[in-house]
Amino acid sequence: MLKVLILVLSIGIIGCSTYQPISGYPENGANGYSEKVLSENSFLVRVDGRDTESYGSLRMKLVRRAAELCPGSFELTDYTMKQGFVIHAKRVHWPYVTAHLICTELPIDKSVLFSGGI
Image (cartoon, rainbow, N blue to C red; front, side, top):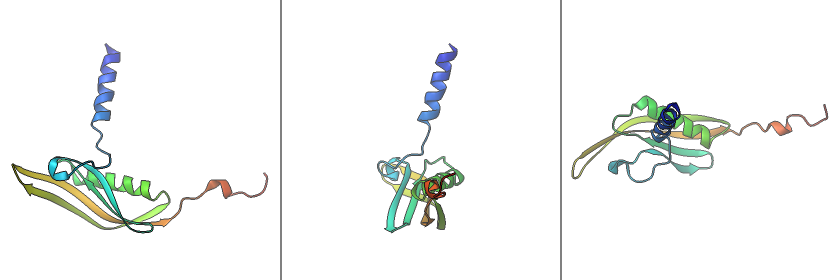
C-alpha cells in the first residue's frame, strides 16, 4: 500500500511540472518557455503560464531558462509582466513574462585551469 501511495505521489509531482518548451498557442491553453535569437549571445525569452500561476513562479522559470541558454553569466533586462487576453468562444486570460537575455561570459572550462603536472 505504501509503495502504491509513493508511486501515485511521484507521478502527480512529475505530471504537475510545467517547466517545458511551449507546444501550441497560449490562447489555446499551452504554457511553457520560448526564446527568440536576436543576435549572437542575445535572446528574447518568454514564459507563458496557466491562468492561476503567479508572476513570481513565471520569473523563476525565466531565470532557469536563462541559465540554460547562458551557462556562464548573463544579464536580464527589459523584464515585463503581462497578461494575454483573447476572446473567441470564451474569454481566455493567461499571465506571461518576457526579458531580454544577454550572455556576458562563457563558463569556466576547469580542464584548462592547470597546465602543469601536480
